Length: 454
Image (tube, one colour):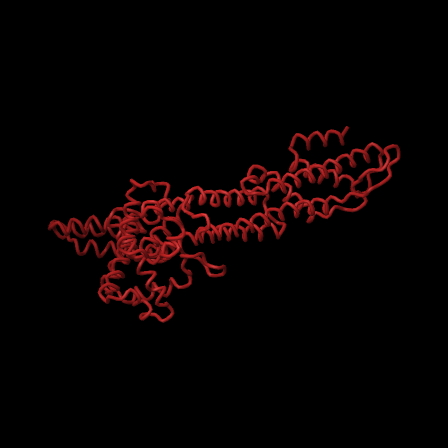
């Protein structure tokens, strides 16, 4: 290429935006590596890289290389403001791990990976971005294996315990081995199959034969990413005949069962905290109980627990806690509705003694909203109550609230007929209509409104 054409080409390339410059770099690198001589490749690549640097302010807001590094294990990271689930890792230690690792990788190699990652971000090339994370994981694994010390991270940074260091080595090893088999450790288990013929089952068995801790971490990773985490129990059936929670509890695989049970227990704590505020979405709270049901009965259906095995014994305790909690939810619903929709036993001319809403007093809207939240919950949870073991308590509460709603409406209709509504009558009509819509249905609420308007 003559000098004039070279100047023209470099001038054109200098005006390219960063994302296009980044996309062209690997193309020119490939041509140069292939032995092409017709272009000034060194100058072209240097110019394109400078174009990318101009956009550094934008790049820094994009996902970092450290995020790509930790990505396969993301589902196991938790903030320690709540009790960690068995098998989870405290998120606050990740910065220490990254600083320790990135400071020990050969600087030129680390810079090379960083550059490739930045270019991948600019090109929106998610595959290359993930590959850069894998490169750093492989470099870290090499350092640990050359040192022949899975706990060496704790020597590089004293904030990292030896247990945490060894655990992270196991995760790196599992991910590396899975990648060699073209398997993912961070997918929903049901995307693949956990049947005895599955390649994931074969991989689990191979890990268990080599190192049971690796098998446990593989199962934990899949569980943490799966909508039906109990399906991981099917891996256990591929092991020795008669495998159950008695045997599993004596190995590292015990963490898998403990995590499922702790997840159930956490669900109950979250439901309790949610309903205790009074400020919640009733349909959402009912959905949380459905999630509890799915995990509770899903774990049972896998038939991995012995009659008096350690996991089953813990499950019995959790179910007892759930039964009390759900019954309390029902009692709280009754109390909330009666407290918000106050009725007074009153003698009514021509009608005898009746329960009449206290329309002379302004409704307490905070209490009304709590009552409506609970009424919505009682209606929404009706289908899930039998599986959760509180159908009796639910049915009682549903009837109590429905009857109370009827009394409120009848009282308001009577006051309308007597033309003695009270100062806050219209507000009471509004909140009665809302309660009717929640605990009965919208048609009943419309019918009530028509009766009042007649």
